[in-house]
Every structure is written in structure tokens, then in C-alpha cells.
Amino acid sequence: MAATASSSTRDDRPCRLADLFDFAGKVGHDDRVELGDVMDALAHRSYGPLLLVPALISVMPVIGALPGVTWTTSALCLLVSIQFLLQRNSLWLPGALRNLHFSQSAFEKGVAKAKPWLRRMDGFTHPRLRLMLHPPAPLFIALLCVALSLAMFVFSLVPGGVVIPAAALILIAIGLTTHDGFFIVAGAITGSAAVSATGWLVNRLIEHVG
Image (tube, rainbow, N blue to C red; front, top):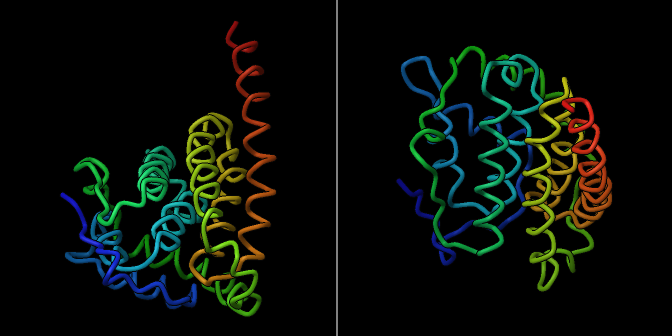
């Protein structure tokens, strides 16, 4: 199924991070939250929130530690990044990703732990360096997001390693969500370092296996 998000109806206004997760937390039903429902609820917005939610879930206490969540959120980041690169007007997700779910209480606990951090981030973000939101910058940002999503798979093989590429994705997504080019630049710098480190990590893993 696809979540329709026509470019003519998308809400591209900057939004507050804490409000975004409050909104996402209300889409659960029958005491569980499905990723597909969360992404559908955000589909009318820009690609910033669509990248931010899975990247942040991957490093959230309680939720991120659940079995299979890291690889699932990595796959979700990759699919969103590819569609960001292609500038698709609708978001497509395979059923296996859409149907991933966790309990409402676990999601609420994760959001509650993240909220103080999100509120502090809201205090630092405001629209600036808007040239990072205009062509050709989004093309290069989308390519970097694809690379970082692939890096998440590699770094997930190391305990806690997924935080490195996910942090860069989170910075970029915060910038896209709040229209803060400073965070996009910070994420691009961090992300370039993370992508460079991926090759080194792959070599170390091959040597270890060998």
C-alpha cells in the first residue's frame, strides 16, 4: 500500500519536534502502534519527518532495543531516502515494514524518554541557511541519506554502532523538518565521516570473519 502525499497538498512548513512525536504517538490502536500507521500520518509532510521518525526510533531507549527494530528502521530509512531522491509524490512501503508494530506503552515510554531532548532541540532550531532546502542541495542530501541508511545496516553489526550513521540522519532530518540549514550542514559533515568509516568497518569485519 502507498501513503498518498501529493506535492500539491504537502505541508512543507517547519514544525516542532516534540509536537511531531506527540502527533505520531496518537495513531496507535488496540494498544499497539504500527509503523505503517505512523508513516501514513506523516505522509502529508515533507521528507524530514518521514526520515526522522525511523532514525530516532532506531536509537530510542526501550523501542530501539527490541529484536529486529534496528534492521527494520534501517530498511525504512533506506526506502524513504530513495523516494526522497526520486522526489516521489507518494510513499510506498512493503507490507512487512508497514505491519511492524510494538505496544503503545513501549512507544509512549520511548517518546517520554526522548521528549526532554526533543524540547531542548526545539529551543535551538529555527529557519536559517535556507539555501540548503533549495535545488540542487536536496539532491546531494538525498544521496547522502541513501548512503547513511546503507551504513546503518553495516554499523548495526556492532553493538550500539547504529547510533553513528543514525545520528547523522537525525541531524539532517531535524534540519529538513524545522527548515534549519545549520542542522543539515552539521548532519552532512557527520554523515560524510560516518560513510567514510563504513568502508573501514567492512574491512575489519571481513578480516575478523576471515
